[in-house]
Image 1 (cartoon, rainbow, N blue to C red):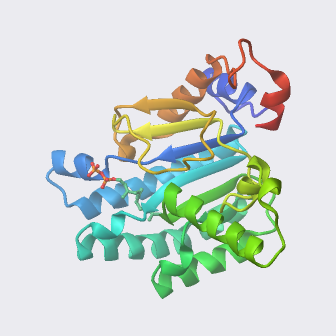
Image 2: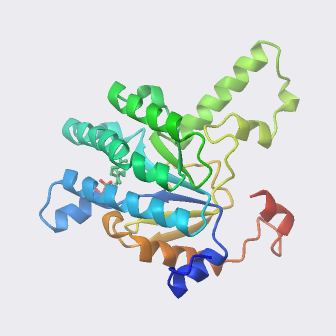
Length: 255
Ligand code: FPP
């Protein structure tokens, strides 16, 4: 284990969750409390992304899914939406070298076809160029909604059925999982939400069935390495039961 880690970090890294998913909330409130524009709040949020991606890899997390833009975020003012899309493209081009250096593989979930062309191109480029990396898998949820994802999976299954490739009785949980955007990615073990709201906001509705929840009042721009380590340490105190009366290692192995 890395000797440069602090004692808390070492403890967090001794038994990290395999997959952490984060609802990054509070950029707007963080900015408003300081008299800044919301866009400046999002820029500060992008700095937190950089720090958490790096920390997650160093602490042994294998998958990190970040809710970066929801299907409902299009309802925000056009100026804010455009700024977020530009920020995405800038973030990707600025961070690519760091992602490569740290062996991070980028993926995206959501209705990616619905993103502006420049954002799609930037995303597609980094996804392709990091595809061979074997460190942390960073999954950006963009134009993402849990209900739309499930709807798309049901449509795909119906199409297969109509073509005679599938019988209704063959549909099981594994098959549904395999038709979601997250096919092949283990379900999150830990879901973090910043800025205190107790909501799921249409994030990974199918996949978080057995995830541990951690809600912190800290706004996303202030959620940095130390806060992430606290979340991982809190996760270690949970007894995961998966619906059984005692922890079931077989099920834990699957998750
Ligand atoms: C919520 O803050 C945050 C988002 C809209 C998504 C996260 C976006 C970033 C971290 C910045 C951009 C990074 C990329 C890669 C696009 P909010 O505006 O809902 O905060 P509020 O609830 O306090 O208003």
